[in-house]
Image (cartoon, rainbow, N blue to C red; front, side):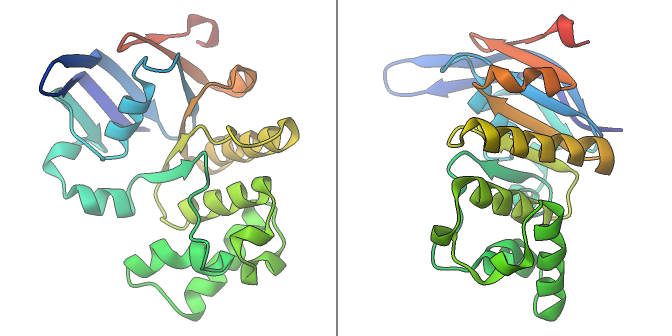
Length: 226
C-alpha cells in the first residue's frame, strides 16, 4: 500500500545572495512493506528530501502526500509526533533519561504512560533484540549498536508505519551496521513498515528493495534493483 507520494516536488534554498535548487521536479512513491535507500554525494539533495518526508519543511513546488493527504495542509508538528518516526546517525537519545524513558517519551506525548507504556517498552526492546535489563540503564552505559537499537525501539513506539532513517549505520562498525539493517529490513518485510534510509553506505544496497540515486537535486531509480 502506498504511504508516501511525491508529485513534482521541488525545493529552493534562499539567502541574501543566491538561491539553490536543492530538489528538482521529483516524482516517486513509497509503499508499506518495502525498504528503500536514498544514495548520493553530499549536496545531492537526499537530506533535503528526507526533511520534507519528515515534515520538517514543505516543498517550494509540488506536493508530498502522506496517505493521500498533503503534508503542507496538515498540522506538521502532529505529523512529526505521530506519523513520521525518525532514526538518526547520532542516536539522539536523551542522556539523562533511562532507556525505558527514552522509548516511552513519544507515547507520553500522546497521553500514553504508566504501566502500559512500560510494558510496551519491554515489548519493543525485545523486538530489536535487546534484553529487558537495558530498560533501566542510561544511554552512556550502552554500546553504539545498542543505542541505535534503542533509537529504533523509540521510533516503533510511535505506532506509525513510516520509518525514516538518516545514516543509521554511520557511527557503527560493520557487524553492528549489518545487524541494524537486518532489523530494518525485517520490520519492512515481516511487519509491513515503509522504511526509507538516507545513506552513504553502499554495502547495504543489496538488501534494499529499491534504490533511489540523487544527483544535483534529481532523483533516479536504480534500474538494477527493479
